[in-house]
Amino acid sequence: MLLLSAMTLGAAYIRGLTGFGMAIILVPLFGMIVTPGQAVVIAILLQVLIGPVGLKAIFADAHRQSALMIAAFAMLATPIGVLLLKVTTPDVARLMIAAIAIGAFALVLLPQRGELRPGPKETAATGIASGILTGFAAMPGPPVVPFYLRQPIPPKEARASMMLVFFATAIAGTISAFALGLADARLLWLSLLLFPSVLAGNWLGAKSFGKVPPSLWRSFVAGILGLAGISALIRLFN
Image (cartoon, rainbow, N blue to C red; front, side, top):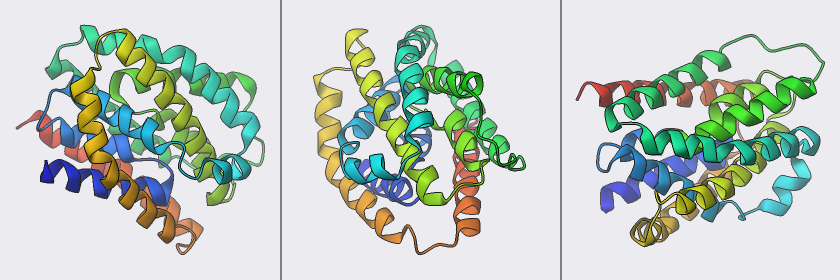
């Protein structure tokens, strides 16, 4: 339990600082102790528990038009991901989770787009992909993070937009996980025990946000994705 709490504290700090990353870090790490399916469910439950914290400020800072559209499509697509997780063997799930983390890292490294915002089709596709990945790996971030980080917008707006989307996907993921029998009272209780670590880590991360230059913040975000991919790969061969 102490190890899980320490992992959760560190991952929640990253969430508070960057606006994402908690599940991307936690799922591969938790997968060393519990099954991939259980790791995904715990990560989803922790995200829905922390979601309301600071929600008023997040909603005010976010680019609401794109964030709400992505969130709507993601919530509709989340049950598809949960169904995929339910029928996938643990070894295949670990391989796919590793590929997701590494793919997100590669996308963030692409050059920023121009001044124009992504269109409705790209926004909707981002939401669908985010929803499927929420249900399958508790990782809504890989499509959403590049969507915002490749735009020339302030980190404050990017961070808030991502956090708004991730709260919506966590709600959909929680409902789907319980409805399809992947979540149970034991995993909910474990998530509640880990929640103080999430609160503490998220608070520390949020205190650090704004003190980091935008270019360094973007580099840090890319580095977190890279480390998550490496940790997932290491888990495959152990």
